[in-house]
Image 1: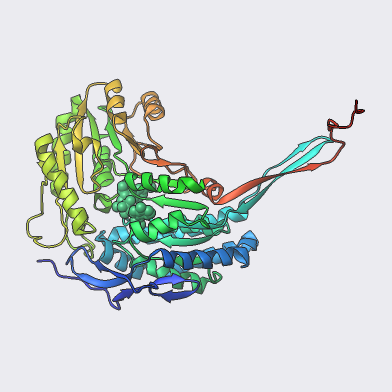
Image 2 (image 1 turned 60 degrees about the horizontal axis):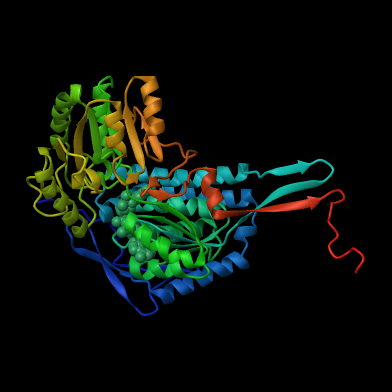
Length: 501
Ligand code: NAD
């Protein structure tokens, strides 16, 4: 039986934050929030409906139209963003503790998320101060310049895996750009998001710039997507949800940034450093409990090293420490919610008829309650198998052999997703040719996902729409208006000036 860790001063009720005030839903609706170790409800959260979204959007619109934030000098905004980063860093332990409690992510990995969240604010603070826009000269005729301006109220909709970090990913560039925002966090994990309001207030973010409405996707999320005064939606979540949002945003032709699901390949050639590849391919799928959009959840291995790879990989997977997410020794914690646990366990059962089970395959011994799944490894998985094609979003990996580069590429590309790819080889020519041919928004050669914040982030095919990262994120949250100034005489055909007949 796992001891049930309870953070001190845990809230029993989580509210919205609208126009500088913590509030409940107008209609009083709430939903229950549970922790994934005991699966008991520890809090209620205000369940936002359309009326609550209307209030939040109205506050954000006022702050955008009349408030100082969009009009501040970049340096002034950057100072606030840096204070936010300082506050996130200062609260790292508390934040990590709450995040781990709410999501089931191992505590050591939750610490990393807090640091990354702070870094997002520092990064965009630097970027807006350094930002400059183009001016173009047509000698003697014109000067043209780009008048960059924040678009307005941005709707931010986020998932439950690494919630605080993913929220920072959208909040930082949206705020840096001068937009005002309404955030709708994932309903499974509203706890850490409730920290933002105080952090922002203390950092000096003007009232109404940041608004948060909790609630279910089909209620609060849907109302945000359809709101006529929200011209932008930045969404991270499942591909199917992305499709619904795409359709709902179409009538207003909203700006959309979509980070969706993945089923990324990790391709290991025979000439790779096998031990390094094994370390990386284990971390790549079992970190963050496997609840990771860029997980390398399909490992493709060249036939000549296949047996050796599978044996070593499975031995290590069996040795992974699964347990209480708050224990620093834990490598895989508890999955976020019983519904998600049931989905992942469903795939584990499907996998037993689709592949050769090498490790895991169910609940770990000694962990009778909580959403624990043993790191599960299936080998000999055929490309048409569901566990090869579908995103499982848990600690489950499919290993498939290949004979040559062409087959590896066909297998890598043979799914609907295209988020990330990891390639292991010492051969420079093969590495680059493969990287350039693989259908993935992001490729890592001889590494798991280690990302410089300046690089483009995003997927192709069913994994997303648009690329954020660095100045691309600023581009998403701003308009680039072209202003053309006439310096000389403009040749203007004189319509209607000829003598009348
Ligand atoms: P989800 O799609 O179920 O929910 C994401 C958010 O959308 C939640 O806040 C939810 O309430 C909201 N939502 C649901 N229905 C909605 C609707 N009709 N209108 C508006 N909002 C709605 O996703 P999830 O289960 O929370 O997260 C896991 C998924 O996220 C996985 O597929 C994963 O790959 C993906 N993900 C992608 C990335 C990326 O960068 N590509 C990063 C993290 C997670």
